[in-house]
Length: 294
View 1 (cartoon, one colour):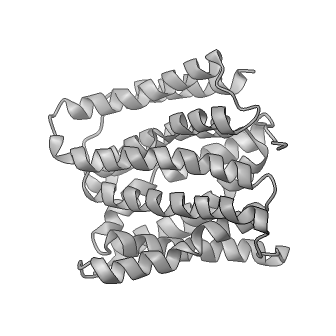
View 2: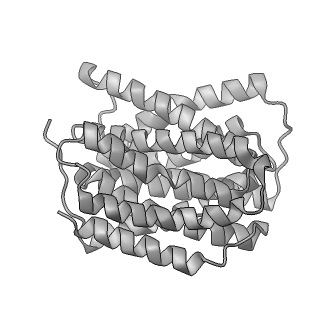
View 3: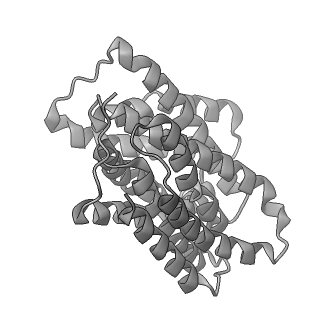
């Protein structure tokens, strides 16, 4: 299997950083959305809107969406990982603070690098790359340790679910990387989301009893999740994964919790760490080391 692992140029770096920053608002928007829409239904609406953005992007390309026999197994695996990962993300966020959700889901670069080491040729974890990732992760840990100092163990279930979601997100990034070597990113995104929509809505109708209550905050949160994250960000990151190293791209995700904690404080009043600047410095140093390693 021939795999593209080009180094990040300035354009790719800025685009990737943009997705990481925008993803910083994702957990906050999920938390706001859950106030009016139950988790499975929220996931369905999110990816219905995101799918619309992807469809509009791919329509001029006139892609052949029919799967070849050798593509079906990979797509089925991607769908399964995608569905479970998004479900755990939404339910986990319902049981914890948005700031903590952002921190835990942002552990996914470690899982991405780990899976990439074993499943993507030429994307091995070098000593220098590992040092950079550890420094970035320490920036995340620094924020999290301060949260634990308040002994808020009522969030433990949500935290565990989110860590599981982060591991699956890492696996999904590697799946996307492999699939986009032989398939257009738009085709992969459509097949990732479309089959999951009836599952999200059917299971919601069967098992979720929370009434839907819409207001401007809930609607704004849903539109952000759908159009910005599930649409724009998914298109960018999947297109970047087609050409660039999955582990190099993933490490930028360590900027997401810093942004997420700030947004959570501004919009939801979640406590903010006084060490945000120190954390951001560690994240920046780690990203620099990873992306200057051979």
